[in-house]
Image (tube, rainbow, N blue to C red; front, side, top):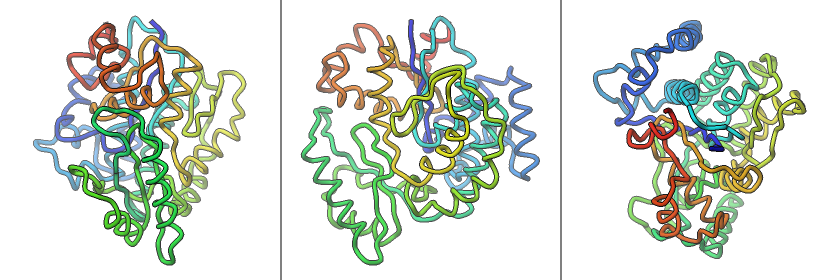
Length: 340
């Protein structure tokens, strides 16, 4: 069974995920010890204390310096449990790109953790701007390109106003993740109708993937361009939909993208999934833990791509019921499908 592995980004380690790292991966002592050494060197709280806490604390667990480390550790450890599948490519959402680098072998596991942990800490320390989420698809997941274009035009208009910084952060399936300064965020919230809980501000999130992150990108380049980058063992699909092939990747360009464009420009996750589907024709997409929230964005992205003739949520659900084409390792009822 051919599989594309999808690595989740920030916001996927929540109350329901507390304890999941130690529950599933306590046996990977060497891997976790290498991660803990990075945390200790930086004077940060241990993963064991965070994951083993008696209760989930929003302020503590969603901080960039903590959330990035927990999510990256869970993602990489999950991929080590895969069995009965042939991984043909790896991609990720936002911070998940750092995890994809480690999963594919472009960075050794501890170096991938050093990158994810370090960039998370720098973004948390700066905490420039904020993010919100707003849908452009209805509950039926039928593509509405006119609605999406209308929203993106509004985003561009707001971003061009004096004193306003506002832009697309992540094209995430049926959702637009938007980011900017307070003036930009507030202007968008005032301009669009409420749609259930949306527009929804994301706590402890900065204006990721926008020009506001240029200072963080500069810090990241100074700290991590010199990591021991290596040829990936698996194809990687980045946030532009570009494929980095094994044995032929330009490592200098890879490092430059990771610590440049990937930090300060919009992340086209929807396009990355479409490229993965069309170029690698997998039997299944596997979303690693923690959490399950990225599964919906993957499914919506496949519908938007018209993969296997799907044009709605009903089409996806029918295919999923017939033979799973999407497995979320954060779901206990699905994890065993790909771990043997």
